[in-house]
Length: 371
Image 1 (cartoon, rainbow, N blue to C red):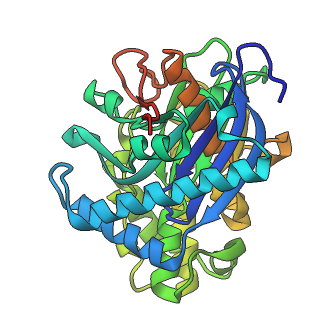
Image 2: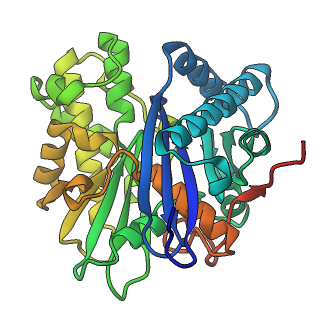
């Protein structure tokens, strides 16, 4: 495979707090300019795997600090095993051998994110992944930032900035996963980014508990309901929204409890409106006003959510796919990009994104051990 000068071939692996599956992206990048996507594969979790990961997450949230526990150890083994298979399938799809790949960026699975307590916890064994695949692996991307006093999130802004560098006007890249985060990319302005609030997390939890569904397909349930303004107002009256950035969230920091008592459709509508309103609040915190809002992540596929965000922000709200980007693979691409940066000693977090005291390198490199 021909490559640009200084470019590496990298795999990025992302498993988000929505627990829907693994995104695996094979990209060519030098870690500074935007990556060229070579291949992408989404690998869904089984219902059994989702339940096991949800149990581990619930357990981890109750700990004062990370510690070994049989259910979490078992979940970590599941994460490592499923990600190894995802790598092997991606290579097969792309017709690429492991020997041609320079590095894997392995995010792992976040089971608890507690920068206020001085830690963040992503499970998955980077050394085992390196040993089994035979590819150098960068994992544990967030811990160094948190140890230095940063939030450890969001980390994607450095990749968002690379993708949006060609724009000559201020734009914001909004990622709608379990939690939402936003990145302002403006020529001449420092990189600015933070978590805005829940994205799909609360909507998914509502649908699962109230209707036995994984998510609100096409936003149809929310579209059939009415927003309860009193509940919405109460949810927005949370100190997180008044806090200056940088700031980050664990998916569990907000719950569906305020919507209890509403009907299925009205609850979905209200929680969807909450995500949209939290994005509008976040825009007011940015140092410059963006002209466009470019949206990645699963939430971009919810037309009701996208419409509400446009109404709340007054901005053109576009899925990143209209730019020729792959909205499904964006996060995985970002971790491949950051893995290359780690190998090259380049920073992945910044004062304006995580609150780190200075631009910081991050990630731990695991080299395959001789067999």
